Image (cartoon, rainbow, N blue to C red; front, side, top):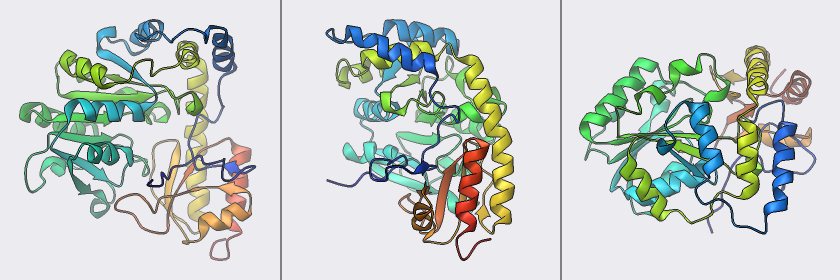
Length: 347
């Protein structure tokens, strides 16, 4: 079986301070944990297959009709369901980006073409769809991108969405990392959903509420036929009772999200300055993580200091020496900086 490499592998590295996965620095809200625990009294029953309470709460939170919402066992579950429903012949994916897009596409025999953003300083430009060969059936974007943390200029993203709609290309935009950026409403395509049936937005509870272990994501789309197709290929009861209960509770935690975003914005600027001063090649990431270049053995060095960072060498378009670290609370970020500076090539 092909090895799955992701951040957050604390099971192989117990006791470390984990900077390899990027969650809300405040941790999981107590109300979310309590709601999941209380729901265990109901586990003799099947989960609500329609996720009715969760969908209703999401509709209010996102201010979209509930008919435009589909819930899944994390965003990755929705990616695979979407691809299974569409079964595209050709697809366009940015490189580097989240590996599950290509993995899901290749699982249905789709030909995947890559837009090499490394040649453009890891930016997405208006030429994203101007690739040689056959026009794609589906195109994936991550905004802000994982692992670079770069945002697509709103005008550029709007143009790409418009072109996809005119050409009948399904545009899937992963907005899972938008919870910790300034001016979120400026960067989301949510306002275009009603007019664009070729647009699908991916979102998740994972980062916003630090609840990766419960696996809960959702998609927004105005294409009723597409959502019905996804429902037909999705396994039933894919969202557990604890996940649904935790999701409803989490969506009430608006002040918690605001505080978490404030911490990230303050610490992000400080960490960039300190990491650059230590001799690392820091990119202008805008999400709750920082993309940078450093000594190739930096992950191993940090592990010796009790700190786990994410090597990005397995991302398409990247090689050794690229890394990503989460933005955590100030005291924890100081521990990371001390570990980095102890490397013999840094200071």
